[in-house]
Image (cartoon, rainbow, N blue to C red; front, top):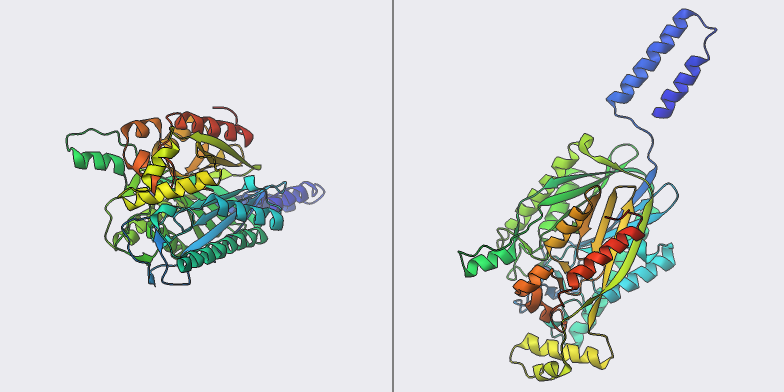
Length: 479
Ligand SMILES: [Zn+2]
């Protein structure tokens, strides 16, 4: 639209020889065009390109074991809601690309992430640093081995079935990436934030349950980041949104495939904006639960609340900030050390009366026998930057909310989205405070993840240092 206005101005300036009346008519024409331009908020044509693709990843070989709750004693026989892998590809004016994939599963194991990244690099020439895989952490999704391996004791038939699912999932994620890249077309990106209030700090709630007079530290992050992606004609192509809260509205007794509140929020947004793809990013919700929970109707209710927060942001396009400029992805791995542990403890653990302690001991000894380094986690930190101010920070594991809050606070001039559950979900990631307080996220949960024990206190400083370095790699200036 702006090029038409420029052409009109050029043509108007070349009519000096024409009559005065002609000049007046040209002048009126320019004013009308400018007025029309303002009325339709036309701006320069898009400099970015974007594309989306969706692949269904619902397990087809039912019954199938769902993952996330130790209390489940049987596989799921029904599908309440389909599950998806959705890819959003972005490209800048120079042709640099990145792809964000959101996946309705409990967590992605490193080996699967690596296999996907290798395929994607080979088939589409997209480097691993530009590919971000985020999991919704739905507790009503399929088991994806070896994530939470200690929860299960599969027989050979079940192992073969889960192996087939993992291969299916790999192919579907790669297909989603390829589809999104193939669909790249001119697009405008913009960013805003809303708020939803159904997340609570579940650790603080547990402390209060034990002692109602306790005054626990209780951080929450109720912000709902929203990345709006519109086609050149102004229609909505995609909306990428996130929330820092476990997808655990549906508790263990609801043994059917579903995406929990995130699945319902995506569904609602896609119904509200036909032709658009809604992608949910799980943020740093390691210690956050939806409240209330444990009733089937609450998952669509929380989904509606979250979708409503996103719709409120989309309804005010003038309040959004344009996201455009150079795209750059960076990916680092940092060693997060465990507190010291001894092989003898796991030898003794083989005879533990708790079945999960026993399985963990066997799992850890198996890893030790294979020569794996169990002194630390090789931890992924990724940053995808678009332009000068927008960045998506992707952290591995079940990251507690303090990290999201602290990282955003450390870069006040930027519009940062900080996601956990990205590229590898190997265990919970506590802060120094959470480690000192103890409890499930600091200690007990490590058993289900087959990790040797809790982290050393330097986990927080190491992680924050890795974020700072990765931000620099991505082209953001220092804090
Ligand atoms: Zn969790």
